[in-house]
Image 1 (cartoon, rainbow, N blue to C red):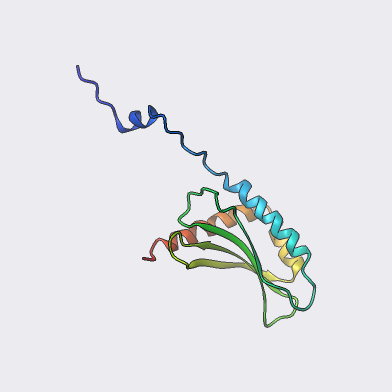
Image 2: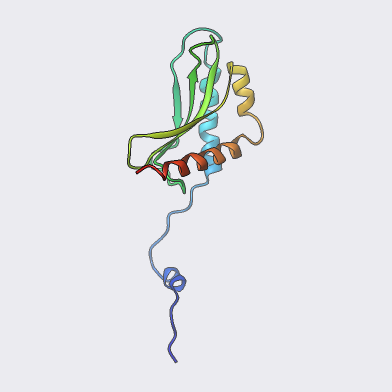
Length: 137
């Protein structure tokens, strides 16, 4: 009798260790907290520099992209107002896909970031953005 080895069996028997899957929830919680601390330091009125907080470069994700960034951009038309957004960088090209999530003054942005489903909302946005980058050749 001949025993056939399925592809799944051969994968299980290899000595290669797979890297543990990244817990995106924990990583996003980390960059959300860093962003919140930076937003708290923003002035209520006047000029401030735009900034972003990235996932660590060596972080392995299941998304099509090499860098994920939560960012704040000031609103040029309204003093003391800003936009909160998420961005995913293409894995091979220097282009990104991004979306604004909310806008308002720093208090409104901080309140939005503290909502219970914010992390899950970011994960859905990241998935959509990374899927949109797959079409870029």
